[in-house]
Image 1 (cartoon, rainbow, N blue to C red):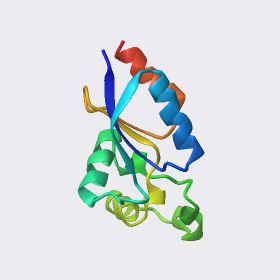
Image 2: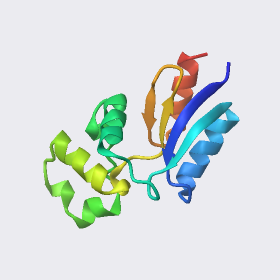
Image 3: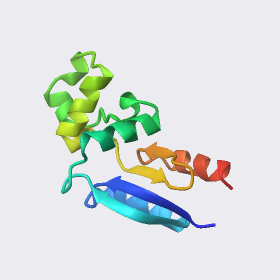
Length: 123
């Protein structure tokens, strides 16, 4: 059975490229490849992805340079504030984000262990 998925990423990000290549090598076929910089995600999509990964905190990237430059690490941000930052600035979205179409599972980040755990549970 071929796994199909949607991919939200940055095409020039080497981490995203490696994750995409790894998933393709595992047989994943991407039905949508969305560049989140060139085509910012609407709020509804960011909310949907956040809900899929377990909440805004799980989708929010604290590695973004703006996280430090805006001193967001010094604040306690609500889910609504995290979502607002992600809608306003793509760099706050942990990437890549993969949505498997067979069951709607959403994975954020480039952890190969996370991908392998998904494949093991769907073998």
